[in-house]
Image 1: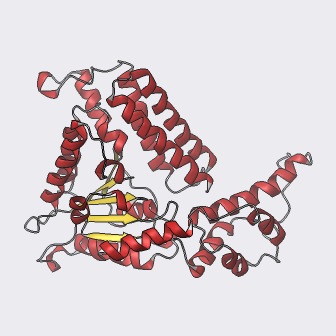
Image 2: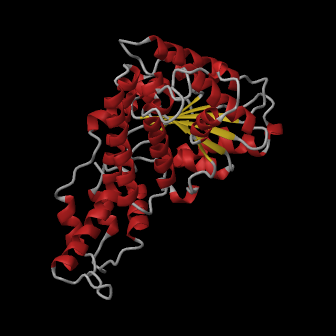
Image 3: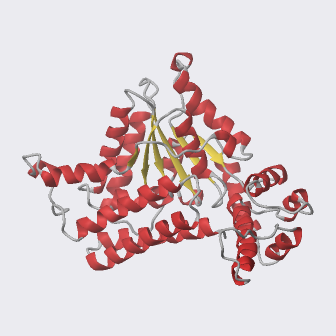
Length: 384
């Protein structure tokens, strides 16, 4: 598992734990879990300062910090409803500011040419979102508004969502279970209504994309559900029905991302009119990813990227990034350990042997059985 993928996965786990504790009224434990999620996200940003999605990670960390401050009673008590606030005072303004933090004013700076491969997924997304946004007059029967991206972690689902938002200059509203289910905007189902209302209002000027990360945690099948979860799910169905109405030429899109599509309830699957499998990269894609990540490294002439692409069958894009980072760490560590920490000194060239040594300690982060499960689900519910 790559450094990026591992830190993001840990952050998600802590956030989901925080939401559960928050709902149970365990304030101090929830605060601690939110703080752990924030720490993981900020560590991710510092570890990979050039990552395209750092703005997205920082925004997510900020929303968790906001909830922490609410739990620490800095703002109005979370149980106070909007209807009971008659004046637009500082507390109400604070709640509005918290909601606005979900909206990225500038989409993550990701472009189509930075996503290696996934041509089928990119084509489907362009047909469903980009072209209708450019020429709605050509689509009298309407167009899809619900897009589900599913597949193993680290294969480009979030990058695809960011790229299409950047392509059509859309308002990008990023949400997850923590930002929906926590009470800092009132009741959870009202949070959902606010998100869709904000997206519709902004769609008057430019398209809006609601990106739901780990959508299975919000719309998945659960054996034990509290009342709030049931109401949230019902509100999501209602709101999605409102935007997929073919009679309303509205440019609001919901892009859901999940590593566990089999956890989704059938009613939600039906609302995502396009269901796109984002698989691990093939040989040509792996070669392109190696070329992309090694382009800024000092490489020896003996490095054979074609051979490395063959050796890494089953690796995700994040796995390959981790391999390249590990090789970079290897040669840099040698420089520091030899006492060469002066700015004028440079590490040696990276050799093929460096890559081979790293790959001896690496396995793909996705098992063959997991890939079979994705293929089976895709064959059952495919909609391209």
